[in-house]
Length: 338
Image (cartoon, rainbow, N blue to C red):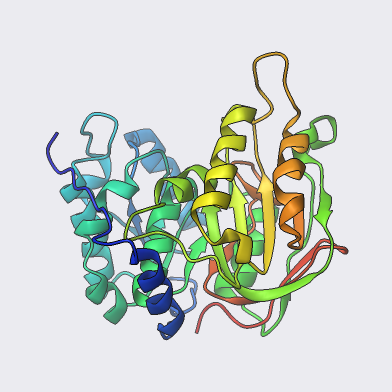
């Protein structure tokens, strides 16, 4: 299949080298978003339709921003929005384009991990701007931060529901930032009947450190590559969707055994939406998460409002935060944009 590129580590010390480079990297804050700014739309993963494109352009422009996109935003190559090279080129063009102020991923899906080797990280570093998405976009967010120091954002994509909760978090982090910011909590409508939306402490305690994380299945897929994630002394945020309970179990075990997540400062879990499905007999999702994460003795809370749900916190990878697992609070201790 054209455009595919593997990225195996060259030696067994790969993760140590990555972690050393990441810890020494100088952090770069992108410019804050202002009304009238141009938001570039990209499709690094799955396909969107012309109707979806029209709808997201309308939503963004109603918020007071301009939009820009290339014809490639509607490309299709199997289940990807173009070949790996086409998708990488589209993203690099947005970073290099001086008229584009921020970059919003149209959707997630699958495919971002295949183009990580095709991105020019030096160009990204010298053209810092807001880059935001979630789910499959975790791969790009993590790679960009660890290779350039640029703070990137786990938040809404173009096809997301731009509801009041999500937009307030978006604005509080990207448009009108404060030196300190405490994330609000709000359970989604109809969440009361669904245990996946429960909000509970697994391990109490306090933590502080840089934020990093995203989709569990994507982070697990990066293990062993040169884009492997450094979790040490970080507050790690995690979410997933549409996975059977045993799959969540397997991926968390993989992270625990194959990464340094056991050295994280804290674990902030979002909503694992539609992950309570399993063959009988089974454990509950809650039982599995507690069984695996409680022995780590790291401050841990499940159920923050982010993930594949309507309410989405905008979370900056690379920004210093404080986390109180007993009170179930997360605070940014610095601005995420300049």
